[in-house]
Image (cartoon, rainbow, N blue to C red; front, side, top):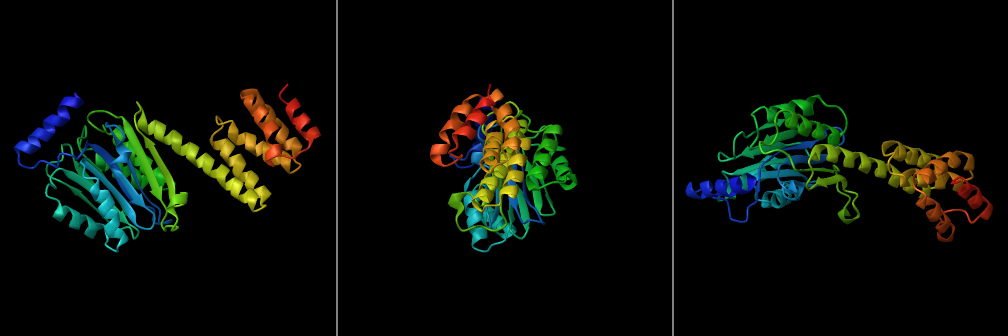
Length: 329
């Protein structure tokens, strides 16, 4: 049905004399842009019955702002919107400028927020029903082609009532949208981007983005998005543990490694490195049960352990290595 529906919609726009440019993708969806007033972090979260929604709809830059551009999408709203905010325009001013210069604004639905929490949204009169948006306190929710007009009010209500960090709150808004009916066509893809309040000036190293996750095609995209968020949090703890080890803050590093393993117990590699660290600093008794559990689940880590002394990642102590290997029996 989708394959026939969307070209038909485009044809209706042509006949009405309000056709978006031929290259504009048709991404009907629901999304949220928001800023955490405590941390200043900003982000976008979105779900749609369309392949790879995150590659088109969600835009965010640390120290600048966040944009969601959807419906008859002009991705330039993301790129140019961030550019205007980077140059000092507020999010409402940037959005107004872009809408005023758009030769075909009626099919657009766009929301923008900046580093000061100034926010605005626009829903063109040709956005497919049910469509609308709500601008709240440093957030905006917007949706089009929904199963009901309850979707975006449910998103706003969930965002306001949910505790946790920005990622948790935005995903709560998406869950509420789906519970209220969601996209009239169903569900397929989702995305989450969260950036820091201030840029590092080195975005290529990844420090500006706290989360950047995309589900391109999945029967339960929000469930999968939450799973990946949990994994990214776990690996974040593991990476922080590595940083602390380089600073010789061993006890703090071990706390991070333990947190990583607790968040993602199914990822055997995380407790493996926790155990390696413990054994390397002379806490073999604490490492032993972790090694034993790891080797029982995935014996390949025993072979990996044997490679580590030559790389300087485990003590070159044959007796210690032999004792650890014996745990696999």
